[in-house]
Amino acid sequence: MKNNRYTDEQTVNILCEANETSIAATANKHAITEQTIYRWRRIV
View 1 (spheres, helix red, strand yellow):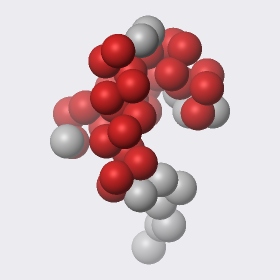
View 2 (view 1 turned 180 degrees about the horizontal axis):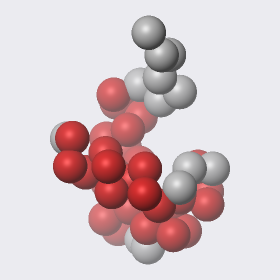
View 3 (view 1 turned 180 degrees about the vertical axis):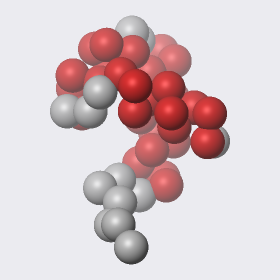
View 4 (view 1 turned 135 degrees about the vertical axis):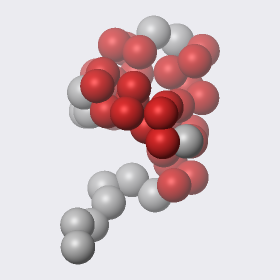
């Protein structure tokens, strides 16, 4: 089983931040891809 890098709470906080700013800026800040943010949106 794979370990998650971010907890559920951190994921939600990153998604909220992405809604307030650009997805690209948020992705760069947290060292994740833009696709990860889109994937998290579908799951959450």
